[in-house]
Length: 419
Ligand code: EPU
Image 1 (cartoon, helix red, strand yellow):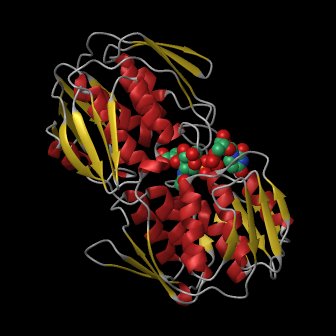
Image 2 (cartoon, helix red, strand yellow):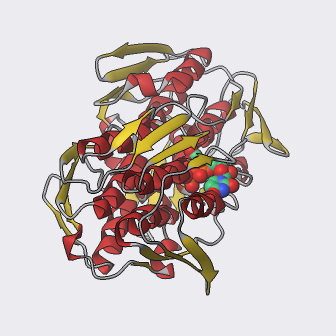
Image 3 (cartoon, protein in one colour):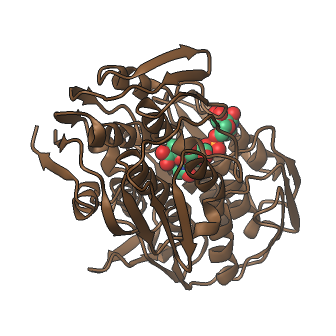
């Protein structure tokens, strides 16, 4: 297993280009199941989760071709099986995104139930209940969700909790249902909106994506299109924190500043000079130590749970005391325990971490436990005195394209070594 070795203490300077958003790419690839025409997806990040999705589609008999620029063509006209096996779903929960499209287009799906997860229980009951309300017959058997339906029927769905992939699954299913579906308490994340834009380009009739009420008029069929995935706001935020934590000056390019409001507000509070332009954002710490900030995660447009761990890293070396309150997932604090190994002063009280900034962290071997946790350990490694080794970085490869190359471009001393 590869490791990352990081020599801490260098202020990062320079520019980095942001990749396409993982969490928009995955549902958009699943949306290809809704049409018999090829769907061409551009600006796809080169990530393990994308590879897993391609493998999943391939197992179903879907033809997937990837060109050298990571433009992916998905042709579901050759589909032979409506099946997502446990061995793939257990490695990537987002595999659940094939459920809605398969039921809507083919009237059947056998999708493994995702099991436990390192960050929380993460059930899929809302996905299942929504499809049932649209007329699907769903049983849970032998660890699988077995769904059968003739044509789905539009329905009014009031989601019990704001769920990103749940909203996406149900919105995709509704595109081919008979009549109108209204999704209330829908997720407003930019990735949901990006998926809606792709579906609209395929001929879907969707209104209200980006608000908490999405209305979908079902159509008989969707067509292929070419769609370019939006930039990854979490990758953007992670490199901006890398600039702030190292007292550096970092610009992220090819991004969407308007998707980063909550994150940029916290960076300003931490003392960064934030600049924004057309497709770029920069933070400049002017050599100063960051100030501790209080963060509370909540659905978009509030502060994203996927940026919580990175701000925890920032607080470990900041001036003062900052709190991180996690309200989305019940077990997303594993990185806090690893950061203590670097000398961080962190106290956990329920879903809040109270972090007292220390003058310096010191290097140690640490272990990544999930994607965003591993990013936060890399950030901590960038400021820890000595050489930090981050183990189990397969987690990071799921969501950050060539992180060591991008950080090295900003001046970090980082390398990947075989474990
Ligand atoms: N929930 C339910 N029932 C459901 C669905 C969700 O109770 O049927 C609960 C969850 O347990 C959680 C809350 O609702 O407490 C919100 O979870 P959500 O469903 O929104 O999460 P998700 O769709 O599984 C996506 C991202 C995550 C991101 C969350 C929250 C994708 C592929 N994944 O997950 O991304 O943290 O939304 O924004 O879009 C990551 O990229 O590292 C990552 C974990």
